[in-house]
Image 1: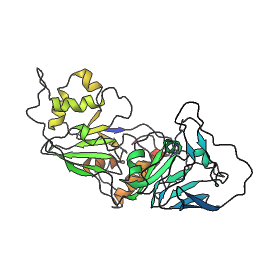
Image 2: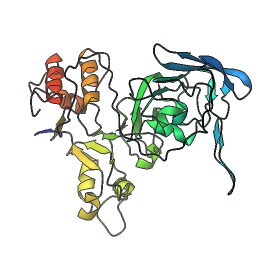
Image 3: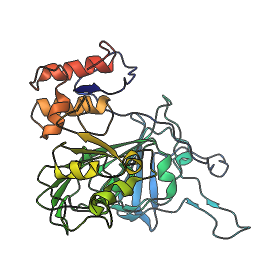
Image 4: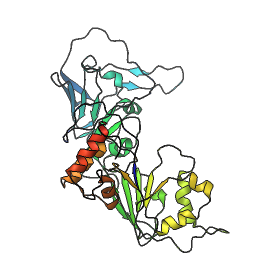
Length: 360
């Protein structure tokens, strides 16, 4: 049975396979305004390091890009008062009057401090601002979450901090030389697992089992439990006929109605059979279980439960052979239903996204 996801409205009239997928989502944060600005001359470069010239900034007016380069920590421009009755500390940066579209931190900088969005003037086209964070940056203030778009290497500290934030867009580029966490491993219950940065998917392979808590550090949106996964035989819940190990998967997400991950498993797998034994009230609160041998979520190429431009980008990469894909993705990529993955599927998905066709 083929199921199409809900229709995504796309306001662009023309799409190409080389587009950059950058959606803007509203961010609701408490506004913090910097200190009043007095008359000052517009500067296009300067120093802004915690130690003075250890970090420099340069501004390119044509692209409205401000670039920070150097090593170590940046100067403190904002600090929240630690005690009642004290005032927050503000210092307006030299660049505060310059319209900024791109904020680029180069490799070598480790701590960018507590930079407020108000320190970067709105771009001339009043578009969004994008922050580029290198692998070396591991510290930032709480107001970094105000920015609409973050770009950083997959596997970096910024990836793990921002990739699963639903209120704005994260875009990865390259892979960190020294990733924060491993992307493969073996569970204490014997199963092997892997994590894919781009699709944010955990894949668990048997023999053996794994528990969901093992993947808490990963910003996963979907989990694939392969048929080879075996449920421990000593795990029957006391006085019940269902597995306490499978129960832990359901209990992990009970009460979390938003942003539930999708779990993919075949209907004949041990996991699916044990999951079916759980009480109805538990299964209802559990993650969305998709039986991959029965249902294809057509168009959902990155397995995040949605159909949008990110899927079109990934589908095009799969078609031209620049990325690999699994069997579940393959079923979801067959947008025209002919059983063959080709450029025709990419074209069909694009037509769906711009409403030239109303279903996949």
